[in-house]
Length: 86
Image 1 (cartoon, rainbow, N blue to C red):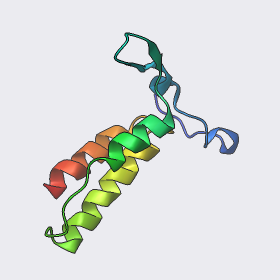
Image 2: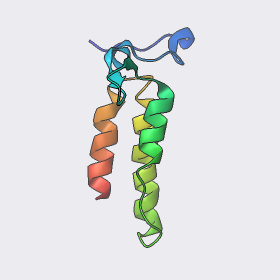
Image 3: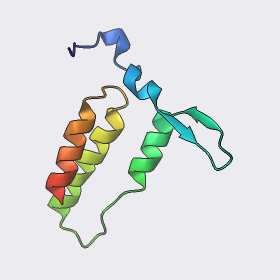
């Protein structure tokens, strides 16, 4: 069951995110980091022709995807918001 994180734990990664690993082209694996998630999310954007309201909504989804590093369950909300934006 999900619980409210203590104030001291708010900026710590959700332990479920620490289970993921990235593998480079040489087959070397390493733990996923917040920087990896931010870079992945930053690489996805909408062009300027998309109405501002939709771009803003999509940006909220992107921010949620990054904040999911701290609370894994935000991934579901981020994905839903992304789909709704489309």
